[in-house]
Image 1 (cartoon, helix red, strand yellow):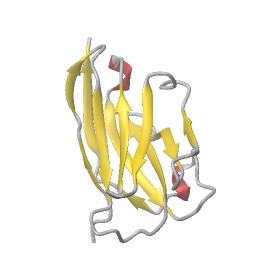
Image 2 (cartoon, rainbow, N blue to C red):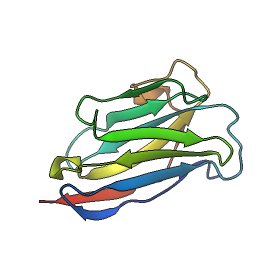
Image 3 (spheres, one colour):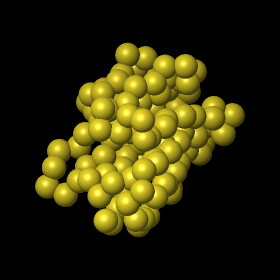
Image 4 (tube, rainbow, N blue to C red):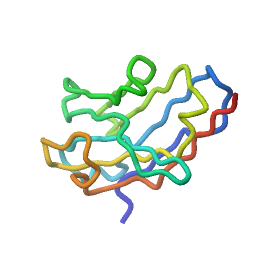
Length: 124
């Protein structure tokens, strides 16, 4: 069963913006924390951002703070990662993840459900 469906990746130039979406289409996860991670070729998966169920608590990695915005619309069961001022080093496969564990933050092992991943490529 597919729990999370991602969309919005693509190829852009440095300085451009993209918005990633992550939907729980069948509303099967109840209340969940949503995290965003990315994995560049040859590198470990790394934390990007996290947002609580209510949306009132967020956290970002320092590498994206001030450029990326994480949000969610629970009426649509969808989370978003708005990525602005993109840099070539942002190139990676981006994954959304979800868990009912309210304490989940930067550790990928706390997340139970993962999206399929979407490629983001930023050229200079």
